[in-house]
Length: 284
Image 1 (cartoon, rainbow, N blue to C red):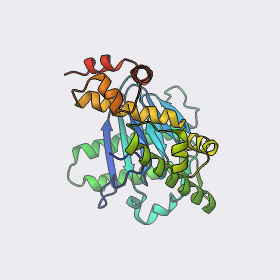
Image 2: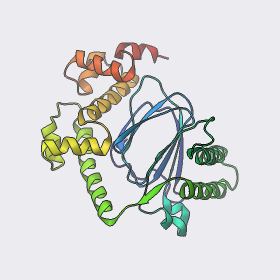
Image 3: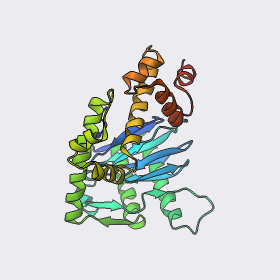
Image 4: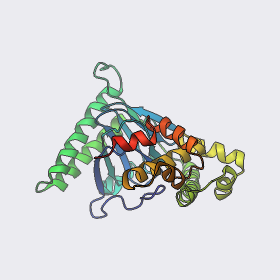
């Protein structure tokens, strides 16, 4: 699975996708579809552009087209509903959302805060998400028509109740340039994560000085490059532990760690247990 620009994540004939998953982690990536994340249980850490959000059950996070986002490794798995849709699903009305970004992407659930301006927006968005999920799972006759109707209702709520601002042409060009540079870095790391990667090396790939690259990467992803690299390597290690019979030492080196001590420390920091304990607890 690509770790940078996800392409073709929806069906071109009906540009909508729904996923219910407890995927533990997913590295920073971006796509042209809008993505709405609704947490079902446990807590979930999500990187979105230059922020890291900790979501609780029933919280909602909105990722606009081109927003860089990631699921950050954590000890417990969190089930969530993910809606992804292209603006083209709204046909002639797609222009009303074009080139806009969410100013307040996190909409928290709080049953006791009816005076909170998020309360009404959360209630209505949550209702649409759950109806969409039900329709999509049942797939009864005419479900695509029903889904499109619910998506139109969702669009109305977003437009009326969620603060947004329109990109200027200058901001849009800068944003696209940033995404192009990030994609170069993500692809390079995906191809080379199993060996030592220096900061100066990736700075050259992005055509930045070392100083400007470190600032650029933190502003674009909400994490340092080393944090991103460790998250990616641990996600690879989890995959190897789950799907191979390689020893923990072999997994460490295959994932790009040149020290078992460092591998154990970073794994425990991100997953809450040692690699050995993780493997034992996941044996069926």
